[in-house]
Image (cartoon, rainbow, N blue to C red):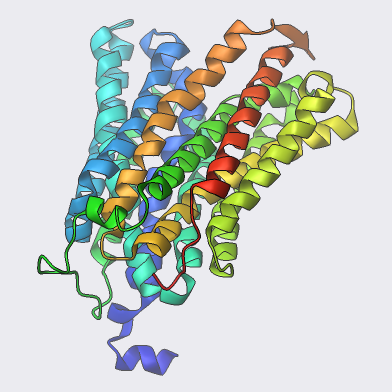
Length: 439
């Protein structure tokens, strides 16, 4: 293997150095967007706004991630070096800008300028970096790992999911160690660190030399014309089941730490959250690798939805969240639900590019994948907000081990998620037709 690599150009033609490592550098950097819950309260306190007001920065980041991927997918298709450089610059500038506006907000408590600045930097600018950074390595990975596309994309997307587990304790330590103003200092320091990581990934990322993008009009078709090669209902089904899986995942994940407190595990919230993040990353790698072994990769989604429906239904029927405190069996069921939903949420992300490539081929996969990520954009606006609305309108807060929680509200979130998962399963079974992987 080593001799073969040397003969064919050494590191310049090594799929790990030219695809896997740069993908991890990019995704492990941008995946830290999910660390928002670690410091959102600190930002709110420092600039003098409610946590609810600052939460929109995260929602905007996910929205612009999906929309930038949708609108800039053609740039990624044409030039991954340009798109990965855009990602590196936008993500770092957005993070540094967020730090600057947090500092300004600390000097001018309650300043609307500070809040809007954070929305623009963390939401819009970082969002563009997220979308282009997420897309840039995916097609390259599938081209280098032709026989194990799921494993390759799963590895990179697992980096996105694992970023929270890796960065959270580091960020927590920085917030505590940097003293007064640690929140804005942390953003400025990490902006520099992540720029270096992403820029190295940008320099290393390269498509294999034996792949040539279509050049003439006959070879190069528009994304829409490629999608229309199969029944339009097929693509609509993929988009909708992807959207529902993300929405349901965000509904539960956004309430995760409160549910953990509700079942009497307030003392180990951090540990359970770390384990769930590992399941999220493991689901990205595990489900996508499993997809490589299946004739129809859509079977992975059937498995994800079947597991999610089963566990959600069991917790709903048993009233696991409301009755879990002090009941070991129900506590285990609720924890199992949290882990499975996290794994399925991650698996949905890692399987969508390979599922799309099975249906529509490789030529326009970056652009088609980008359009499909618009589902993530809308789910980012609806998932968290829908769960928050349900919890605030159903049930009432009670104390469990001294913590204010709303068991009825969280159970109601599960009722809605269960209904949505059933809809996703029906779409998966009846709209998304089988595709041969040779496509």
